[in-house]
Length: 372
Image (cartoon, rainbow, N blue to C red; front, side, top):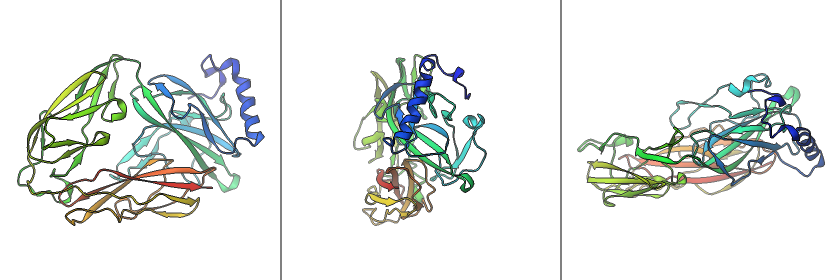
């Protein structure tokens, strides 16, 4: 990643001084009160694999060091952790390829988040530039902008803004298919399904679906936001739920058909699970909260329940806002400290619960609004 104006696309060059002047006048005018993404706009429709102009306003924030831009599919867990300080030197160009290692809050496995663009005041426009859209992006995507702000001897703090856009490929879809074994066997007759490791009646799951496009790119198509729909051959064996989720409701042979952009694929399934009736548990992530920055926040899944009264296993994750460090993500009441924000920001959390027989709930969500 380079930091000179000569590395920018040609369409930037005639306007470079105007961009710089507007940026600083906006920051000084007092009209822009918060750090925010100006471009691309929230709700915009973009094309995968292309460059789009990225621009932010600093608002009242002084001492911006750099801004990093990250892409995520809408419902994936946030990977970039926001904190009052971040170790390491200020950006000198290498930051664009630096790996930010975090731990997945559910599995504990390491994940890597690489910024699509890292920018400083030297770029045009300041802290923005030509932002690449991932070539395999499709459907609703979150663009998260994280700004590092120097506090002198006090270290650094970070602020963020995010927008949700729709990304569509320019290329035609050639074929669609389930990325799983065929035919698919669910469950093993007579085996205990304690701790949710074996398929059972009531279990809710997702299947990976991919599409081959004319530009040679394979894109994930499991989410309905990509244009995918599912049809079950027998609703008494496999039931289709919203958001691309599937539920085991009976034993036997059936099929599942996936459709996207006029293309179809069919998967044969055989379900052999313990026939003991088992209703799926119901997740309840609690009520919306509004808190001040620096406050300790406790989420609550205590209202979640299992129709048969079974004990529940909890799995919390975060799907909106810059990542916070949650404690006790596999307990009913995880907690975190509300981070610094320059303006009111929303953090969204997801809860899934599983009973001892392996049945999962539909995800439940809760928003936490953090005020300065």
